[in-house]
Image 1 (tube, helix red, strand yellow):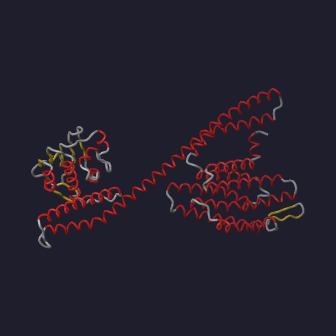
Image 2: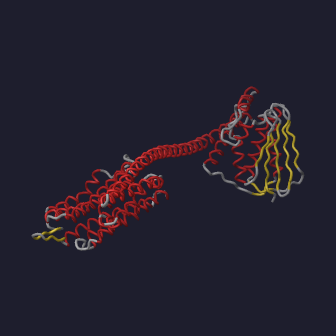
Image 3: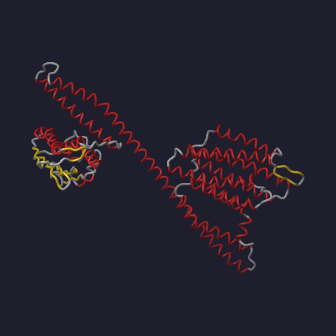
Length: 531
C-alpha cells in the first residue's frame, strides 16, 4: 500500500487528529478568552464525532456497532449546541449565562434518552440494525433550529460591529456553512450506512470549515505561525513516510539506510521545534505588548476627548457670568448707578481689566476645544484686511505704550479685498500682535501688508525673545511655550499660536515663521487670497 492509499484509507482518523490538534492549539492560544474556550471545546467534540465514525465502521460485534451508531447521533447533537455557545461568546465577548446554557442544553437531555434508551433513532433486529427515519428527523430538526439561531446571532452582531470584527464573523459564517453542511449531509442527508464515500467528503468539509473558523479566533499572527510551522509539518510528514517505508522494507541494507535517515530527521525535527517554540513565545510577547499599547492609546484618546469636552462645558458655563459681571462693573465705573470717587474708579478699572483678560482666556479655551473636537467653523466673505489690521493695532497700542514699545505699520494703499472669516482672521492678528508685545522688552513691533501676485502677504515682526531650535520644533503644539517666555509672562495660556495655526490651516493658506535665535526677534508671515 502506498502513502496516498494509506491516507485515503485512514482519512477519518487523520481528520480527527487534525481537528483535535487544532482544538488544542485554539484553546492554548488564549486560555482565558471565552471565545477560545468555547471554540476549542467545539473542535474537541467534532474530533470525538469523527472518531465515533471510525469506531462504528471498525466495530465487529453487532452490539458495539449499534452503540457507536447511537453515539454518532448524540455527539452530533452536541455540535450545534456548542456552536451556539461559541457564537454567543463572539457576539458579546463573554459566554452566555449558565441558565441560558442550561436551558439551551435541555433538548439534548431528551435526545440522549432518544439515542440510547429508545428505538426512535436506531433499531436493531437480531444482528441487523437500521436508522429510523422519524428519530433521525427529530435530531435533524434540533440541529437545524440551533444552527439557524446561531446564524441569526451572527447576522445581528455584524450590524453593530466594526468592519474589522465583521470580517471575523464572515469567516465564521463561511466555515460554519462548509463544516456543518458536511455533518448534516452525513447524518441526515444521505443513507450514510450504505454510502461510505459521503464520510470521506464530510471529513474534508469538516477540516476545511473548522480551519476557516479557527482563522477568526486565533491571534493576528496566525498566518505567520503557520508559516513557521511549515518546516515542522514537512519534517513530520517526511518522518511518517520514512517510518512507513521502514515497516515495509525487505532488505537489511535498506533498513539500515532508512534508519540513519530517520535519526537525522528526528534530530532536525527536535532542533526546529525548539526554534519554533521560542519564536512563538517571542511573537506572543510582542502581541501582548502591542495589544496593551493599543489599549493605552485608546484610553489616552478617550481621556483627551473627555478633557476637551469638559473644558468646553466649563468655558461655556463661565462665559456668561464673567461677561455679565464685567458689564455691571463697567457701568459702575461709568457712574451709571451714581457717583464714585477716584479710588473706587481705579479699583473698578482694575477688576474690569482682569475680567476682560479672563474673558479672553475663556474664548481661547473655547477655540482650542472646538479645534480639538473638529468643530471649528468658518464664515467666509469679502474682507478689507487693512481695516482689520488697523483695528487690531488700535486695540493693542495702549499695551505696547505701557511697555515702552512702538508699533510701526506699513500697509500698501488700496489693498484689494480678500476672502476669509473676518472674525477668525482678526483673532489671528490680535494673537500675533499680542505675542510680539508680550515677549518683547524694548524696541518696536513692525506690521506690514502688501499684495504679492494674487495674495496679500501679512508680516508681524518683533525684536523680542526669539526662538531656539528646540522651541521652533514645538511652537505650534498645545501649551508649548519656551521657558524664557514663561518667566517673562506667566499669564499666557500657551494656546495662541496653536489656535492661529489651525485657523489659517482651515483657511488653506500658508503660515511661516523665522527666528535667528534667542534675543534676536521673530517674524510671522501668512497670506490671504485676493478676490
